[in-house]
Image (cartoon, rainbow, N blue to C red):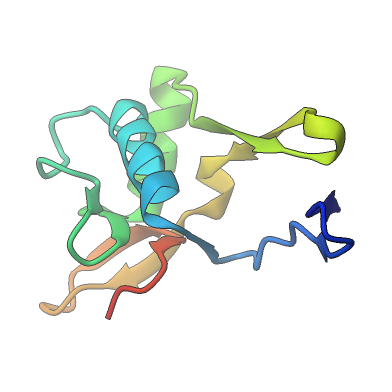
Length: 120
């Protein structure tokens, strides 16, 4: 809980399994996602900035299998400014958050449940 100087409090409460964030935070996340999944099977960007969504054009099982076989680190760390200006680091195992979906061609894709706020 964060005191907003005027007696009001704000509570950090992620809406797991979906996490919505402002543009600056989404852009930072998108950059990190690109470093976690830099392999050739990806499109130019894991996160589509214009749509405010993130996905991998592959099945989630294939993504997890590659992580295990290649011993990759899919951890995402997010620093949140908390009470008394003390930062709290949230550690998220990205592989556990991957969600299976289908694209417009009914091809299986793997969605990262991070979305930019205020996107249509």
